[in-house]
Length: 193
Ligand SMILES: [Zn+2]
Image (cartoon, rainbow, N blue to C red; front, top):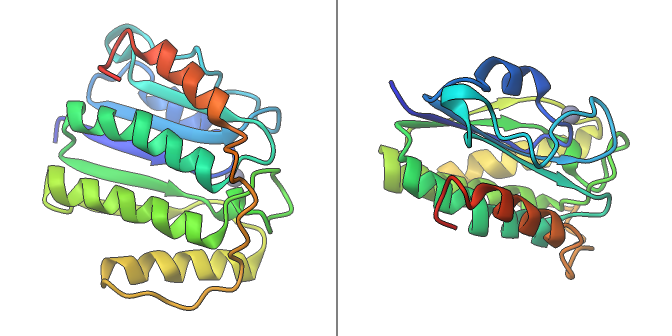
């Protein structure tokens, strides 16, 4: 395959993945993460280098960013880039530690937000690459929340829903919206946004 998109919505920046593919024209790496915590990488203005310039897409969020911030990042940045890059497969760094119950990061995704985000990615995979999509688990340190976002996401692939209990939505105002706007501005040199 020549074109892979990796979407990383673990609460931490995926510094290893970014390092490996920062020069690659075959991979687009898109990451949402809590800005200001470990590992400290993933600044909005780092876009990759050489043949990979424009293909590292970082959205460093302030604490408290949750469902509406993540939807905005997907709808206004990730989705148009997916449509323009036309991946042959989508991979997801699926970390449960952006959940509001998680003790390690300050992000605030609800379980609904998790599952909706996967649903959006799944729709893109069906439209663009015959549903070729793989999720692999990363962090997630509140075990019940982790369990329900994993089970809820797998249910999406079977057109089912499960009952979830950690569904408080605290981000109606989209605390991370400025971060998304900044990332759009940086990437408007490389993509139609
Ligand atoms: Zn993490």
